[in-house]
Amino acid sequence: MRPCRDPRRDARRGVTTAAGRRRDGGGAGGWPGTGGPAVPPLQAMTGRLPHLAARLQGFGTTIFAEMSALAARTGAINLGQGFPDTDGPSEVTEAAVAAIRAGHNQYPPGPGIPELRAAIARHQKRFWGLDVDPDTEVLVTAGATEALAAALLALCEVGDEVVALEPTYDSYTACAAMAGARLRPVTLHPPDYAVDLDALAAAITPRTRLLLLNTPHNPTGAVLDDAELAAIARLCVDNDLIAVTDEVYEHLVYDGTHRPLTGFPGMAERTLTISSAGKTFSLTGWKVGWACGPAPLVDAVRTAKQFLTYVNAAPFQHAIVTGLELGDDYFGGLRDELAAKRDLLCAGLTEAGFAVFRPAGTYFVTVDVRPLGFEDGMALCRSLPERCGVVAVPNEVFYADPARGKHLVRFAFCKRTEVLAEAAERLAGLRV
Ligand code: PMP
Ligand code: GLN
Image (cartoon, rainbow, N blue to C red):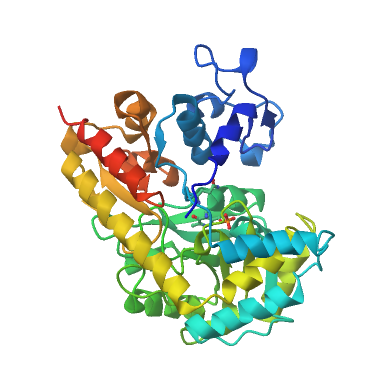
């Protein structure tokens, strides 16, 4: 596959912060001594911002922006933000070019083009045996990110609680806050990151509106098994909860099997299943996502979604139809390729001296940095480019109490084999 241009290089022209403000960088606007982009370190952003609404105070800059900017500034290998360094399948990228040339360049229909909704419904049947009506039970969104935001905005009342596994993908907490809801984390613990079902049951209160479940799970790489999912389904039914599931890594499972929660007894009528094309087709910048579920849930989410982006990515929607119709060899090939990369990076990290929690799925592997004599993952990540020319993400940002993840660091393995090999070699130099 052809290496793609590192989109993060564009960060030299500035990045958008979590607060949605553009901070123009370069030249005199850069941080002192770097000559690079004006990306303040997270610490600098966690103070009170005078114009930011109270519900968003403290969210700062996303760790992905901070760490990708650090990589761009230092030229380090970026194993932080999860994006591949190769383009997705050429059939799909060529289909996008053809769609642009064919004039699919104006607003698509609000719920998404009918061809894509039909292809998503066929995908749900083909891979997961699920029956979905493309006309009433599918909504195309601007990536899974928008589907998650629209779901939380549409489904939560102010003061509601949202139960989610912790470490928690960063947009969940921010979107819950935007909706006026509160996230109640249920912590997963290494080495296996299994769900503590008692803790999950205890987190459910009369204020709980929904359970937000991510499997395969970012950042741990855990893939929930049937027993966990069946127990979670029972909790949802018993407590009359809506489930919103984030399944963007549905095709990236190396050990075990992905099973959508909606397929469990009593769940079809209460589950909104979210996914996206970004990870499945190595096209994270296209931002084509979707939500499937019973019509009343999809109607609610569409109501919020239409006032966020209204619609997006007209030609890319056409191209993703081509992607979803690719043969089993494509989906199996992607999985096998990434499984080999997981093995390569896990071996390199083990060799370097980290305690490695081998992931069953996703793009990511989490390590404990303490065996190498480090205590603080955030400090290590900030100094890692200087120490050995690699960028990673500190897991503490995914915890309500950062102390719980202080010693954990996430590395992404969705990179070319030679890049992973070079990163492993560099990391080997950390051991003194
Ligand atoms: N959920 C999880 C768990 C993710 O890791 C990501 C990043 N791909 C997203 C949602 C956002 O997906 P998208 O890029 O399609 O908006
Ligand atoms: N999902 C990607 C990750 O976890 C990042 C996406 C983003 O930058 N928001 O690294």
